[in-house]
Amino acid sequence: MEFQNLKTRIEPGGVGIITMSNPGKKNAISIRMRQEIMECLAQWKSDDTVRLVIFTGEGDIFSAGFDLEQFRDPRLYDELFLTSAQYHRDIWYFPKPLIAAVNGPALAGAFDLTKLCDFRICSEKASFGHPE
Image (cartoon, rainbow, N blue to C red; front, side, top):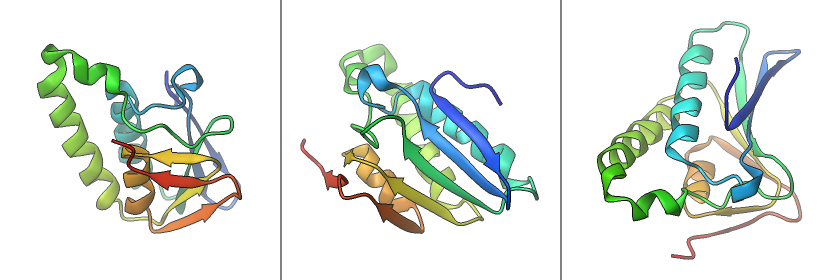
């Protein structure tokens, strides 16, 4: 699968890895990234070669949370709400184990992502919070 804001791969043993990749914005979870995560999970949900999924962030940060620049544009409000609601449901109801491999700060919406996962494995650099 080719994505703009994710790097995905399936490792031997059925481990699907989703790496949030938006380093210029500290892996901020944009509308596009949420759509890509939903698409990836939808494909892996019925893929018998994927037994579990690991979320992580590219570089030294898990994610700064939702892309707040998008919240400044009133034209995006409907899409923000719809993608956010569906994204959270898709993660919450994903039928296979989800693991957050937290390699650095997980803030706001990224903190929520880690809470929606079944397990969290954290580096010594991991931190969590809702700064807003």
